Length: 122
Image (tube, rainbow, N blue to C red; front, side, top):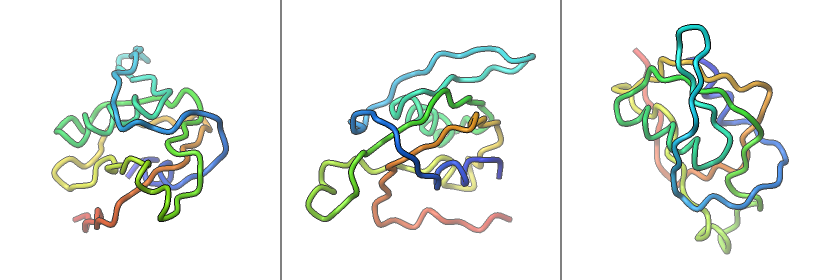
């Protein structure tokens, strides 16, 4: 299942603004004969997730730096200001089949609402 699940569970410290819930198309490069999107912000990772989840599961990405979605610890008081993340490839119909190169970078502050995104891979 590639590096995506490990990538989404990793936490680290970096300094960026809280994610507004929007998306932005990242720049792309060619490595060998394959296209890779250079993901460097929450908006670009959200765009990548939306592409995979909408039926383009074979696209590739390279993480360019650490990404922070929400800087503070989530509490009931500030949860309203955090935008919920929809996991990449959360359904078997769009199982991620591309390459996601993390380059040693980390993602922090993803907020998942109470929803069961698990599925049996078979």
